[in-house]
Image (cartoon, rainbow, N blue to C red; front, side):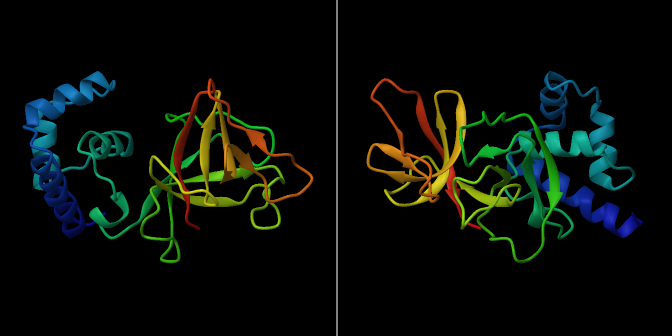
Amino acid sequence: MDRTTENKLGNKLLEVREAAKLSQGQLVALLKKRGHEVKTYNISKWEKGVSKPSIDVFLAICDICRVEDIRHTFVGKRLLRLYDIPVSAGNGNYLEESDYEMIEVDGLTPDTADYAVRVNGDSMMPRFVDQQIIFIHEQPALDEGEIGIFYLNNDAYLKKLGRGCLISLNPKYDPIPIREHDEFKVFGKVIG
């Protein structure tokens, strides 16, 4: 990374910290809670472009400062979370919020994508195939007929929302009922 790029990164780090209304000391305390031992002078050096944080600390700062769009905020690269545990297009898997890697995506990825997941199974064929990476826009509700990622009783599903059920596109799978006592929530809408 050349000095010009480092200065741009430093300026952006300062900008996002100030936008989050955090002092350097407050950011140090929040990073410490996440297991990162840094000092205020480290943050000062990063913001001045003298040095740069590790990728783990950088991502923690982005999370703490609620940088929603890392890909456009820093140095023009677009990064998204790709969750390690695939969502089920079959019998269901749990989506762990902490198990993800950052991937660089291209300009064909929708701007409103907040994260990516990998499809597991064939219940959403022919539209979605096993091991395909799909992009999700986080939102708490979907309209009937929309395809999204859903949490139902400790499992994450890629399905179409039906009236009181989750529907597969592959006709060999029965709808999954959503009962009154079930733990159910919408993670987001599939957008690409």
